[in-house]
Amino acid sequence: MVSIFSLSQAMKIMACLFKEKNMEFFGTAWALLPPVVAIVLALITKEVYSSLFVGVVVGALLIANFNPVETLNNIIVNEIGEGDDAKTVGFIHAISDPWNAGIFVFLVILGIMVALINSAGSSAAFGRWAAAHVKTRLGAMLATFLLGVLIFIDDYFNCLTVGAVMRPVSDSQRVSRAKLSYIIDATAAPICMIAPISSWAAAVSSTASDLDSGVTGIQLFIQAIPYNFYSLLTIVFVVGLVILGFDYGPMAKSELEAYRGERTGSLGNEEVGETEGASLWDMIIPIVLLIVFSVLAMMYVGGFWDSEADGYHSFTGSFGDTDASVALPWGSIIALVITFIYLLVRRVLTFKEAADAFVAGFRAMVPALLILTFALTLKLSTSALGADVFVAGLMEGAAAGLFKMLPAIIFLVALGLAFATGTSWGTFGILIPIVLPIFSADPTLLTIGISAVLAGAVCGDHISPISDTTIMASAGANVDHVEHVRTQLPYALTVAAISFVTFILAGFIQNWLVVLPIGIVLTIGTLFVLRSTVGKQSIVDREAYDQAA
Image 1: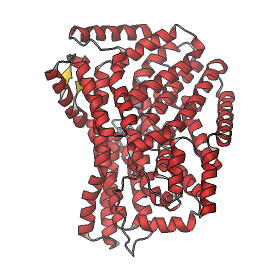
Image 2 (image 1 turned 180 degrees about the vertical axis):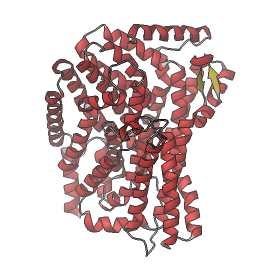
Image 3 (image 1 turned 90 degrees about the horizontal axis):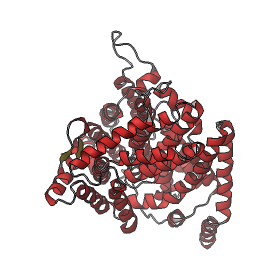
Image 4 (image 1 turned 180 degrees about the horizontal axis):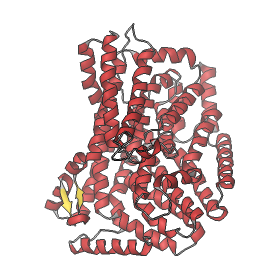
């Protein structure tokens, strides 16, 4: 059994080794300064590229102890430390990392798929079908939510697929791109985090698989689902918000503008074809191909069809052992090739138009790829500065306090770490090994503690401007990234506050059958209070516009 003390001692030794190499800021609160600077600048200036770059520069300066030559090395490419403890930093390492490169390829392929569908007129055909069947704003938002729930395999896949499919529908019903991106984001990571068959379940399982916790990684993940209050209550919140028909904060302004027919927040780089021969099936078939081949690819990479000598994996086990950065490009490129041939055979596209869509798809993904590159480089700096060491120290101090309050404290720590670093996977990768030994003697509290890590990681990821999932939600809805972050922040923080209360209760009650219903009641009650107070004006404004029109 790994103890929290041996883990913290190892981290202290690591901190000493780095300090011997003049890493004065390693393992201190300064490790979180670069992402905090980037986030604050992005929210103030509403310009994400320069804000992220400034954060990268601040991180490089701290790592180099303000040495100008080393700072430049840290921005471009460098290796800090020696041996197994070495940390890589810089743009080149961020781009060349196999996982990141795989995700980049996947994004480009999805961009090309969307461009092909648009060029063929499939989106327009789907829009015409939706206009005939989805008659209300409520229907458009609920359809977006349901599609987000159905595509639970991977959050990147979820964001981009749901965005591409539902943009024409939401636009036709005057739903703002900001609201669309919020619903996409709220049904991406939160849904993946409560789906036993998903890339997120695989990541959590692999994090806990080598730890002596008495259960397998996938068992731990499944046991934690009923206590993952942020993910579960976000679902309740989104459905309630849509049905009650109100908004508050910056979202209310965006929704009113969309209701008046003003397209605000859109990046305006969409090209939708109007091919006469296009049908609804030209949209459905490519999406189905993407889903089917992505699932098959994740099973294949996870070893589902390994030879008998190696031992067959179960369906769930193959998802636990898969590598999404390999599987998603693997599956999506097969879907792309078949879609390309299908649209040519259908004669809704010429060969030249289909080839041009490859360029258009890549071009459409450039903003998301650029933001993601900056964000990943910033994460490398944060890691090199020892954010995990700093957080381990916080958790060790918390362990000496009120034991049953720890789930709530862990939730806040995970939220803050994920918000500052922009990575939920990195957050539970850091915190799960720390939390396991703290609750080793109490299986129920262990489950609640793991759930607090996962819920806090999802929440922090949800509200962080430098989160890859947040970036993908913006790209999926084709909305300005800062606009998406700014408008969804009050909603996510509302659910976070309710989740914090439920984790306090869970530490003492330790029964999800009691705590989860309380959390649902609190969420619904909060929605009604918000509707009658800060959300009332949004309803009045829409009614006034209808009367004037």
